Image (cartoon, rainbow, N blue to C red; front, side):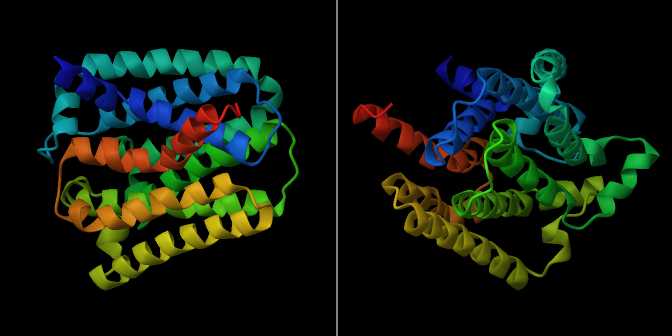
Length: 283
């Protein structure tokens, strides 16, 4: 029963929704943003549940033996229900944040573009031919929603610290997306969706992956040297751990590993920051 609950927590995208909330909290804590309207946290959580379940609802089970895809095939009604529930919650929160409609709409468009290639309508099919489309869209969505949108909503200035942190997070998420792309190579080919894996050679892809992790580490150190905030050093933890897990990830297809451990890398430094700050009485 515990395994079933754990699987539901991950495959229903409740887990990744919690990851997004921790990433936003870290943005606010690390960059010392004024308290963001709590409605924004609810908006991101509901929007994540809606977009991810919509994406998996559209994913056919014919091309993969993935546990997650097969789980989704058995729970189509649940995924549709979560999509609708998340959509209703996101729209309600959007209305409460309507004074920020422009930057919020940008997040909605980017999110839609990630799943659009899976739609059967001809107008969206051409997106399948964009070589790096889904990887770049997904990375931009995560970086924009968890890092830049809170700053836009609170009208915070674009400082050097913001730039360091944004670039660090972008390249960390991008490196993790490359590992997912590599794993999904066969199913993407069968669906006609191109990605970095189908476009770059194995050698160039490895270089891009290493370069992404390197950039993520360099900009994390840049934030520390600029801000002298010891919590900035925690940003190196997911970079180093992802690098150590690379060989295992390339030879492992476990959905629980990918969607729990690797997805968890995006919020690991935020979780460590929260635990240490709480333990030190700094919250």
